[in-house]
Image 1: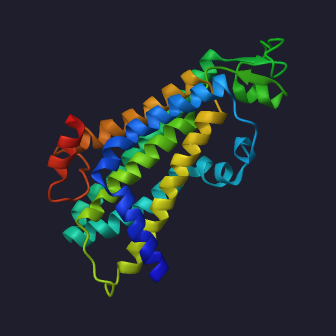
Image 2 (image 1 turned 90 degrees about the horizontal axis):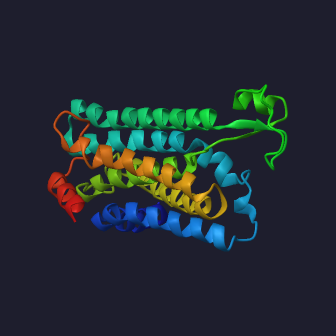
Length: 262
């Protein structure tokens, strides 16, 4: 338990800072551009992480929203209830996860439709021999073909959105004071560590996507959708009264407004 608490303090001191919330979006955007330029001009040699079947991609990134949802749900519920004691406010704050789910669903549907309407089926990965009889990606793959369209990076979108959402929700720890003997202490400490490591995984895999996968325009659009999803909620809508609201902090509104003005 002592090691867990030490790890939680380290992650808390790293991710809960206002500077992290302010500069992480810029850091993600710039690292995506730098990684993409590196991929085009001086590609890195293939590695375990360049294989789409690596463990982090298969068991974490492919389920990124599920991991984020399942860890944020108890974290938001426990921390918000401990601070406010109001079940209604907790339910209101938990609706951020429903909003996030809607953003994830709508954006991935948009990406899929764009790839469908801009794509064609080919006989080989080198885009030779158009197979016009196959009008969908599923049908094309089912018949052994290769579908090529404008494939907006879902990884760039979702990893950006998830990392920024976790960092925003962990801001509640600024206000959280809890004795070690409190019944919720172990649960919240464990969730802080889990969310902290999950954030680092999302950022790391975002960087791997930047240097190994997709072309520049596909990653730009994916990252842009992730940034817009985050800013449209935490930077705009959640500042309004008719919204799920920001994490309960005594000065959250002022801090948030100041951070987006700079």
